[in-house]
Amino acid sequence: MSNSKPTPCGHRLWIPISVVIVAALGITAIQLQPEMDRNFKSWAVSAIGLFTSLLVVIWFALLSRVRWKLRLTALTFVGLACFGLSKAVRVEGTVDGRGLPRLVWRWTEGPARRYSDRLVTNVTDGAKAGTKIGGASDVPQFFGPHRDGIIHGAKLSRDWSAHPPRELWRQPIGEGWSAFAVVNGKAYTQEQRGTDELITCYELLTGSLVWAHTNQVRFSEWQGGDGPRATPTIDNGKVIAIGGTGILDCLDADDGHRLWSRDVLGENKLPNLIWGISGSPLVFDDLVVVTGGFTNGPTVLAYERSTGKPRWAVGGDKAGYSSPLLATLAGHRVVLSVNASSLTAHEPATGKLLLNHPWAKDNWPKASQPVVLGDDRVFISAGYGTGCEMLKITATGDGGLSAAVLWKNKLMKTQFNSAAVRDGLLYGLDDGLLACVDIATGERKWKDGRYGSGQTLLVDDLILVQAERGVVALAEATPDGYSELGRITALTSKTWNHPTLAGCYLLARNDREVVCYELATAQAIE
Image 1 (tube, rainbow, N blue to C red):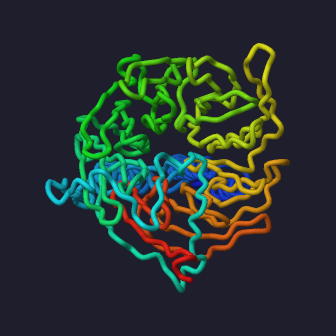
Image 2 (image 1 turned 180 degrees about the vertical axis):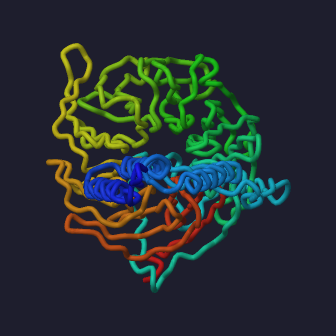
């Protein structure tokens, strides 16, 4: 009779099968969460996938009962394959706004970059002075003429099938997420060309480069990409722009020569934000107001418009990624600033703190513009699961302001987008889907149309959407619902830049290309 120990039968396949089933149930449960941020969903699904793969490898190595020789051979092959893959690929930014890395082969090169040459001739005195162009209107700053995401009087044709947008010009452009400001037939933006960060001026109708001002700096961050983020502000013949590293320049709008310059971060010993300085300068009265860096103050800084001399620097929070805004609330004219963990209001002349409303934690970026409603309400929103709040602002006995939360929820989770209001309703991208929210109650009327980490503008009674993948759509958005009236593939790669609509002229750009369209108007058709 043999005393040998019996050999176990089977490979315990129930273990990996159970692991895969549990993982599938977990992924399904995550995807069924209606208000869970899509970034968190993406990261959670990726983590579950990696953890599941690890558990299957552990099962195969230790518990599968497959012959050891075969196990060692398979594990060696997998290990070499993973090592080889890690050496064969590189990270080139992110796939989209969800933050997942984009992997490309190390031996491949991106598309060769070409840029517009600076015009040395053919820039007449009349062109330098700037002339009005029929059908165009001025958009001198970020997020529309009044920094509120609303365009009045464009009167666009609603039928893009019969009257499609007409492409005027298209050309390469430097890296960066800056939008355009348009004044007197000139379009101003910021871009990165190699080691040079540029403020550039183009002719609106032709795309010809009129001038370029260069700073030899480069902001680089693997997720957000390279180059400047903020949009120039045009005021009384001056171009005021702040770059990705905090260099604040005031230039002559005609020829780009520098009038004054400040190193906002360097002079104030402020570390840069993780994703770079993004707030566009606010220009009013005799002041230029910008935001600070990644430390507890100063958060908001003001400079003299004519000379660049510092006027005030205040605040004790880290800066955010939105742009300062001038508003009147409860009888007080104030500078509003959305910071890393607060909304603050400051007296324009001195920077005195009038309101400090704590808002969420500072571990996730806040990039959306506040929406001012009347003279006593402010709507604030952010992505990454933060959601939104409606605040009622009242004056206090000591000359300050206080904020009471009227409602808060996660029904408008703006990321890079900013909402805008029309007829008592807020329209914006809620985690990549176009949504409509009642400002009185916070109730969401509807949510439809997938545009990713895109941007929106309210244009009269319509809405213009720049999708993250480059499509531009014109839509009808009402309290009852939403329908697209037309769309064009304006760009074909990741687009985080805000579109600019200057009358009937639409400028769309990303970190590779810029295109200008002439949109048909109802008046022109008649």
